[in-house]
Image (cartoon, rainbow, N blue to C red; front, top):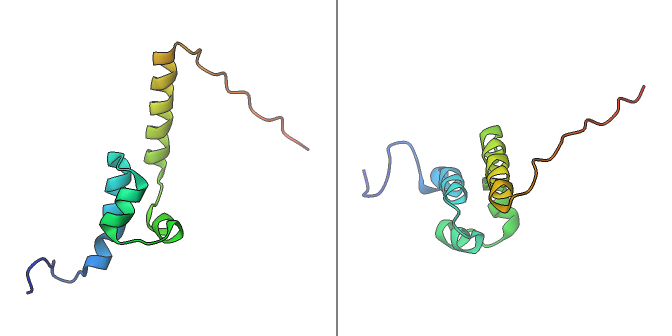
Length: 83
């Protein structure tokens, strides 16, 4: 097996994992794009999959910032149901 390869995988197969890890690590997008070889935002976004746990983590970070800034926790008001 050639050096740097995982059996049954090619480097392209690992791009999605690389992009997710770079996003989670907070690496600036321009830097991440160069690291994985994406030349356009559109292609990069195809690999930057967002899952529910990412959304929850983002909400927690925003809540933490609000606490640091002394902002009141927002009240969630549901939209009225239309019949």
